[in-house]
Image (cartoon, rainbow, N blue to C red; front, side):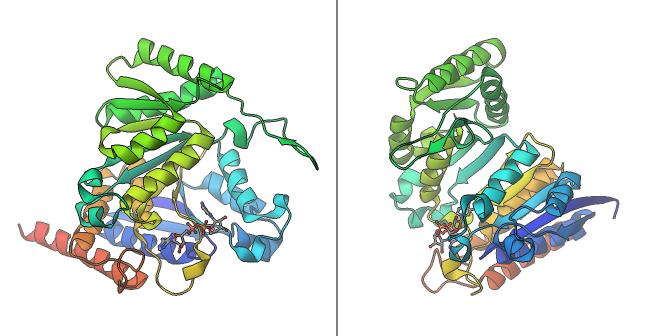
Length: 360
Ligand code: NAD
C-alpha cells in the first residue's frame, strides 16, 4: 500500500452507524484493489456523545476532525434527546461541527439512476436522467445571523450575508459548473429581501468578471421550487443560500424516490465533511433495513475530493450495477433486501469488475 487516507468517522445515532459501516466496507474493498489504505478513527458525536460525555460535540471529537484528511458522518438525533434544551441537543452538535470546520459550501448532487426513475413521485420520463447539483451556503444566513430572540409573544431571526460570503460560495458553484454542463441557476428572493438583493448583484458581478463562459440565470425561490418539480432535467448547478438550500435540496431529493440514496459534502473548511442527506431514521434503526446508498456515495465523494477519482467512479458504477440488477432496500421495494445484503452485492460487484478488467 503506497497511500493512506485517514478518516475521522462519526457514526452518530439511529441508522448512522449501520450505513457508515457499509460505506467503510465498500471503501476498503476499493482501497485494497486500488492500492490505498483506509485508516479510520471512530469518535462520539450527536446523541451518542451526549450519552457518553454530556455534550453533542466533545472537544476530543473536534480535535480528531481537525486532524483527519476527511470526515465521514452517519446521522444524528432521535426522540431520546428531543426533550433536552437547545444547547445540548444533537442538532446543535452538527451546527457546531460545521462552524468549527468553517465548511461553508454544501454540495448535494441529485441524480436519478434509470433503475430508480419509476420509483419517483413524478412520472419516470420527467425525472429519468436528472443530474443536478445543489450548492448551498452553509455557515451564514438566517441559521447563524444575529441578533435573534425568542420572547413570549414575539420572536425574530436575522438573515445576513456579506459580499465576501456570497462571492466565495458563488465561486464554488461556478467552478463546479465548469466540470459539468456549465450552467448555474442562482436562487434568491431578491424581489423582497435585502440580503437577496446583495446576493443577486454579487453573483451577477462575479459572473461578468470571472465566469462569463458559464450560463447564469436567476430564479426566485418560490418559482425555483416549482421548476425543480416541473422540469428537473433543466437544471445543472443550483446556487443558493443556507435556508433556501435546506428546503430545495430536500425537495429535489424526492425526485430520486428515497432520501436514502442522496449523498453530500461540505467543503471549504479545515477538513472536508461527507454525510448522507438523510437523518437518523429512528423508525428503522437497528433492523438492518436502512438504505446505505447515500453513505456509500458520500464515501465516493470523499475519495474523489482526496484525489482518488477513478476509485470513486468504480464505487458509483458498482452501486448503479446493483440497483440496475433489481437489488433494492425496503425504502424502495416492499420486499427489498437488507442493508448487509445490499452492501455485500456492491462489494461483489466491485470485486467482479476488477477481476474482469484483470482478465481483459
Ligand atoms: P429522516 O431522514 O431520519 O427520516 C425520514 C424518513 O425517511 C423516515 O421514514 C426514514 O425511515 C426514511 N429514511 C431516511 N433515511 C433512510 C435510509 N437511509 N434508508 C431507508 N429509509 C430512510 O428524517 P426525520 O424522521 O425527520 O428525522 C429523524 C431524526 O434525524 C431527527 O432527530 C432529526 O433531527 C435527525 N436528522 C438528522 C440529520 C443529520 O444528521 N444530518 C438530518 C435530518 C434529520
